Length: 249
Ligand code: MF3
Ligand code: CO
Image (cartoon, rainbow, N blue to C red; front, side, top):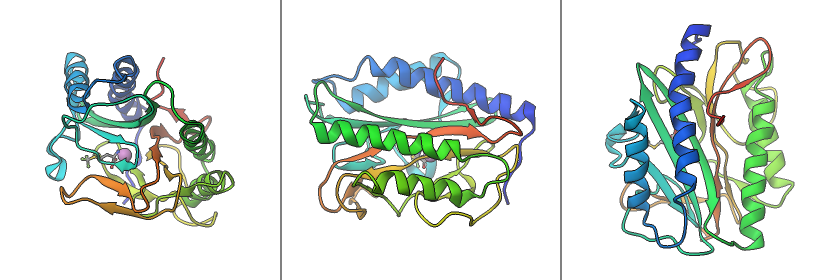
């Protein structure tokens, strides 16, 4: 069942999302060669708690950390560790916040110093795919209109979309219906209605689409070792313009 939210509920989801957005914005300044992903996690958790929120991922289905930090060929769900960033890496940072009964969720992938042209293009194309998907999150469209435009944007740029994980409804729970795949033909799935709140999150590989989950049960890497990027926003479908709830500022 898809939970439709009132204007008041969307405003409260937006409060959780504002903490996510501000934390990501502040954390950007710390992403540089030499810092460990564990240090980034500690900083992020402090920022979330300072704003009265709680990290939504910690303990979720046994996930051990407050954020996901996925470096280079890690696609998603990288567990923060002693691993130190180095110049030329890319790092996906995924943050979920619980605040006063509601959830927000967003992710960015950031360059560490100067990165390769391929990495730069991968980041640009993945963020572009998210924005193209957001643009389709309009009342009357169907879920797979988002999926289809994301896949088209990615593949026309020579990259591939991950199939194994999807975007999702969000708000009263971290994961709600519907699933929002990043591939497939348009015109399928539930119709988008005003009051739906969705986390759209394309995961894009520079090589093939296949991924493998490591022994820790979480860390997901590309099967071919290619670079991967992930961008995510929580959005609300309204009768008018789509509201991007995790956008900073
Ligand atoms: N943004 C991801 C998601 O919505 C991150 C979840 S990590 C988990 O699925 F630990 F909470 F599962
Ligand atoms: Co998500």
